[in-house]
View (cartoon, one colour):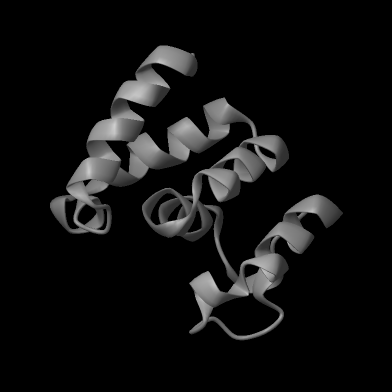
Length: 95
């Protein structure tokens, strides 16, 4: 079980359609890597802004870069446009 804040749990539960294949309670089964991947790939800008409110931008950037640099298979989980945009974004705004 993941140690989630109440805000993180509510965020995931409000967006459970992104994690339809994950068993309930979704907030306990969705990893940070999966959360970041799905929100950056498929979420709206409002979803992304809310993600930045419940997680630190540096933590999100670390998860993103670790994932795309881990292997080509993991990198393929992200859309090319998503990789390009968030690489530029995190290089500018995350430390």
